[in-house]
Image: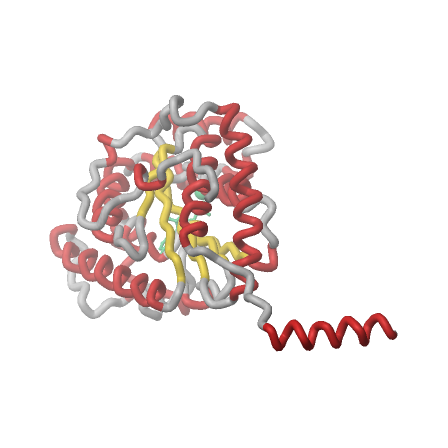
Length: 297
Ligand code: AMP
Ligand code: MG
């Protein structure tokens, strides 16, 4: 058994729980982990994950889908860089979801992620995901216009409640089919405070090496903080299931969030009990022959 720094169940949203983000701290407890401990904890988990990924690939019948969501500057990119550090790039794919293109808009919103889902033996990471369809699209319902949905007759918030509910239901069924097909689905919400977002956006504006990350839209979206909060609360409450749980990660300290996420993924992979395929008796005999043949060569 691997030693875990975190109790993953502390962050997990139980099916049916109603989430109020203002009651959940954006800072991790220092008693659980200090900054200096986090470096060792993360590198332990990196090592574990690299080996687990090899077993997952060798076994070739299960898969892992990791979804990262959060406000702008919540630390999604840095999490991917640090948590996946040391993993064989051949066994892992990252897909970032920006605004959908014309072809994607013309299809059901769950058509879009299909090509990026992990094949058996693989890990896929979604940097944002189809969840944007109940987050940014809910905050900006005009994004529904080019989707031309027959059920949408008006963009009034009160008229759209059924649409979000049906999207939650569809997502739950979709993730259930993934789980039934051997894909572990883990969803992380990087929970940052409004103050921390402000200081990260300011950092992008004053530090020339970070300026490339700055997008004026982030300032506009920040004005809608409380609408996003509601959209996240409703989405997470409605779609955290046993098959595809949400984890709410305090993300004001980047080092804490990274260590926690790596440790939760490690716990979940550990519970899959991944094994290298066994070499059978007959195969061993054949290997003996191959050895002799190579030695004669
Ligand atoms: P970034 O993660 O900074 O590269 O930004 C990606 C942008 O794409 C964000 O503003 C998202 O809200 C937006 N986005 C992602 N998915 C969708 C979607 N389905 N519809 C509209 N906008 C989206
Ligand atoms: Mg951005």
